[in-house]
Length: 171
Image (cartoon, rainbow, N blue to C red):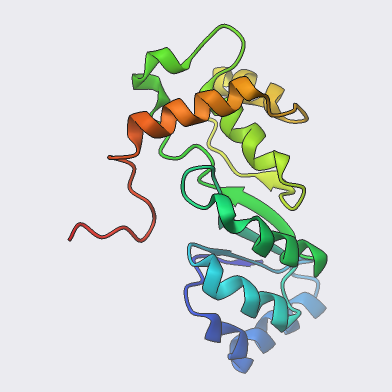
């Protein structure tokens, strides 16, 4: 079971809600309990302290939250599985053709960057075509290279002014 978009860490103090999930788990309705959040800095410490969470889905990419690794390490050390989302940072590489070469694509570099962090167990990415599967799969288990880091830097320079980070404000 997963509660999506947890924004308020006080949810872990809501005894009725958490009791309902515990009852469902005892009934065998699910085996693992997780959350997704866009507010990791507020939510992850409370999730760890609750002792209830088996897995969490958090925003993690080289452009938006590169310093989040310590927080994810704390979650992993507490036995919580970590899945990274939004790893493609808006996935605008298709319109920036100079970011694609014969060996590595931006998508592969972004996936490798997230999976380089030992605290990240998996990435959640959209694969709309079989070509995406063929493109993304080789990144799993591959090492991040200097070439990959250069591709990520070029992507960031190209889209930084337009990339809407979660929680961005137009004013």
